[in-house]
Amino acid sequence: MFENLNWWEIGALLLLALLIFGDRLPAVISDGLRMVRNLRTMASNATTDLSRELGTDIQLEDLHPKAFIRKHLLSEEDEQAIRKPLQGVYDNLRADVTGVHNELKDVASAADVRANGSRPAAATTGSAPAPAPRVSYDDAT
Image (cartoon, rainbow, N blue to C red; front, side, top):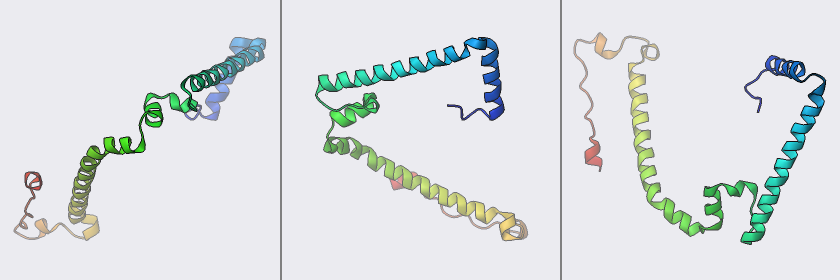
């Protein structure tokens, strides 16, 4: 909750709270804690009521619609049947991206002056090397 604040900012907020609320600060803190406890109790009671009404064990995390459907309405076979068409597309896309990544690394390492220790080959020789033949993505599909 306070991961974006450093110790100085937290101290300044506490000092500001002390200046605003003064001697009522302990009462305000206890009222806030009581409200959080009541909210937790209400959430627990709601999940208990839902579990009793639906006849299944429901946790607070299960109230998210995707998690609820995945846990209570779909079997593992149904979930695999839903994922199967998209898995092939994902695998093909991942293979293409990996190929492009490897080609870019090869080009970057060939063009890197610091790694070669001298100028690129095109600058030292009079003629440029022949470019590698390009593979068309239309041919692959």
